[in-house]
Length: 465
Ligand code: 5GP
Ligand code: SF4
Ligand code: MG
Image (cartoon, rainbow, N blue to C red; front, side):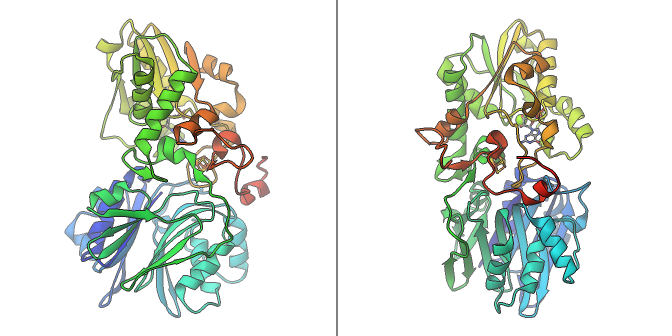
């Protein structure tokens, strides 16, 4: 998901809508905006679909007045059951004795089910099926006086990954979990402030990047300025390495590093680790593009756009059902036959998850007359599900959970298949000595199976580490 908030600007809702539009790649199912202004109080609109289709019309935007607002773009993750309902669309709003508060959450709460059971037993009435709603009920039960303190109390009970943007009538609040798994940055625009999942959403409204919210930090922003707090026990950070590989936009800066440059460097590492003689390096667009550029630069094999992506389709994996995903590939990608015919082709993609996309792409490339197909993958084999806010299927459905690299190669029926090593990936994101196995610098659980936060709800359901 993507979160965004702003304070101290005229027409906050327009900035939030633009920010969310720039974060649309983080979630395409639904979006919502909450604003506050003194004469109307809190205002909210939540809709299915793209921001550009819902938050551009005057009829919606004029219901969202105010100089303070937050928003959310959603896609459902591992915890969610069935199709999204509008009641699951964030931001969530709660009315407390000392006023209202709205919250938007990116990440996934790993003890949400036990928290929910406990809260329901004590009388909380849940409106949605979302894990994030726990935060609102925990805030309601807190004995603290002010809302930011109530939020601190609530978030101390929550396990897992969260980057939260929240607001009261006078405050914009940003928080990252102690490990800093999901990103959150601070920007400035005129006399106002901005919080955003990624820097690309600062650029769109002409805001300047100030700094990242630090892992374990909470900022409370008012028209008096910014106050920084440390509500959680300090731990060594474990930022999601997959944000660098796939999730973030390539024009964003994460941890002081250009996402594009990390991806290009992954391609360079791949070309060194797994060279192959071929005629063309082609990306699987768009997610494989920067790595393919790096692979071509390092290997000297020409880069070519062997596959064209229809720009009017979303990212396949955000489509929630497997059936739609299966159809999706041909609707979205097409091979440039004139280019591919009789060529030995290296295809660079970001990841192999279920393997369905890769299989179809290989078939399309062979149909177009390629002589050889070599897959080079910009992440290590995805053998474990993510429980921290990225949608990966159950372990049984992950190709790498049940097959060795050679078995995957046979399954995909390609001439060769190589994944970047975990150390190579760490080098590409700026860790010159690779992964520190005693104290890994990033979360890489979907590749290593080492979960930095125990997925309590999943273990209760029988998930085995
Ligand atoms: P596959 O066919 O292996 O399931 O899909 C792999 C390709 O689709 C990659 O190019 C990746 O960009 C995207 N993808 C599909 N499904 C998912 C998913 O559930 N999680 C992630 N992280 N990427 C996916
Ligand atoms: Fe990121 Fe993978 Fe960790 Fe999930 S498990 S937070 S996708 S590195
Ligand atoms: Mg892809």
